[in-house]
Image 1 (cartoon, rainbow, N blue to C red):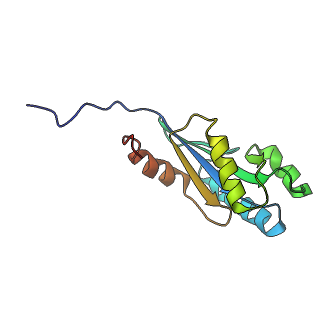
Image 2: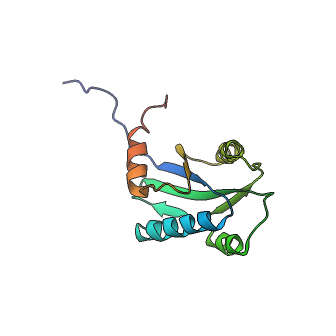
Image 3: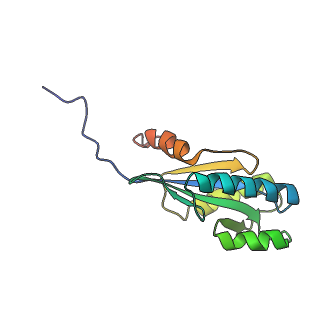
Length: 136
C-alpha cells in the first residue's frame, strides 16, 4: 500500500505578532486591557509558548522619534515595547515592523492594531495549519 505523500515531521512554528500603537492615554488603556486579557491566557512579557511546537512573540510597535510619556516609560519595563524608526504614520510602522521581522527567525508574522483583540492560542494554531505550505 502506498502512502499519499511523504511523512511530515512536526517542527517548531514561531509567530511574530506586531501590534501597532501610539503613545496616547486612550491607546494606553487599550494596551492595559489587552495585556490583562493576554496574561490570563498565558502570555507574559510578550511571549507565549502555546505548546511544545508553537509560540508567539508579541511586540507593541511605536515610533522611536515620538515623545515618550511617563506611562510608556513604565510600559517599556514589561519587555513587549518595540520603538522603531517608523515615522508617525501607520504605513511607516508596518514597514518598520517588516524590517524588524526580517532580522528574526520565525515562520509567520501578523500585524494588528491596539484596539483589536487576538486570541493568541487560536492564532498560533490557525497559522501553524498553513505552515506545511512553502508557498504561503
